[in-house]
Length: 319
Image 1 (tube, rainbow, N blue to C red):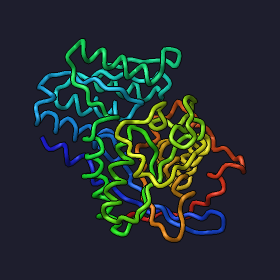
Image 2 (image 1 turned 45 degrees about the vertical axis):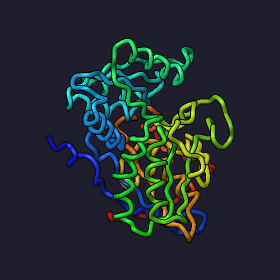
Image 3 (image 1 turned 180 degrees about the vertical axis):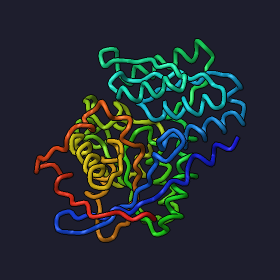
Image 4 (image 1 turned 90 degrees about the horizontal axis):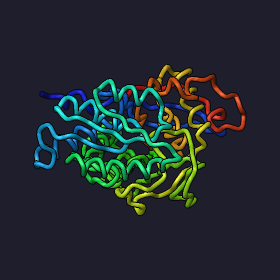
């Protein structure tokens, strides 16, 4: 079984734009080309294979994880492939499409509302369930294999595709993408910059907010993952969720590239941080098909105050 051939080695594109009278370019990986449609296939496959090899994950053992969507989908798909029943604890505000896709892979969804405690409560319930059933827990928010997977695959590919890359931008979800790719780029060029983005209404690292809500699914949970190394981050960018959604809409409408909300946020943050000394890479973690029942499927917001409406998209090249 060589499913590895269906995960990784995703296309890289260079998006040319104009903003505040200056032209620039952002390089981004199209991660929806992966097995189940997101960058999280990389970590799910890596963790499952590594843990099966070292004996921590036994044949037929259930997998229990906490997720806001894509990681759960990836563990569901790849878990099914390897014969593992998957149970996922997730906040009930994630898109309906994500939940249904998970169930289509045969996994079990356990929803937790904000009133019940949201993401933090989901972590507690998942641990209780795993202890009761003897299930394996990937613990993606604290598992260095998460970072290692991105370091060895996505980070490596980015450097191969753009050897002189010297900056990386990403939201903070599990932390694996930001830390793994960021570390690989810094190891390749110690002067590289790593920019993390947070939703402006739930900025824990930059603003110290303890609670809040936003619509950028996949990032900005109400805690900081254990694998985050703050010293690796050079600057934190705050992104308005309406702006992120609008950016993704514009990229779809003008380029025919259907990307998810976090992809819009990543591109927006990349443009904000771009300057003549930087060659910035980012990722489009997934596509727009998981967001049909969200604001992403609505018409473009023409509000002139949105940064997304001040960015002129010119064209893109495949690297």
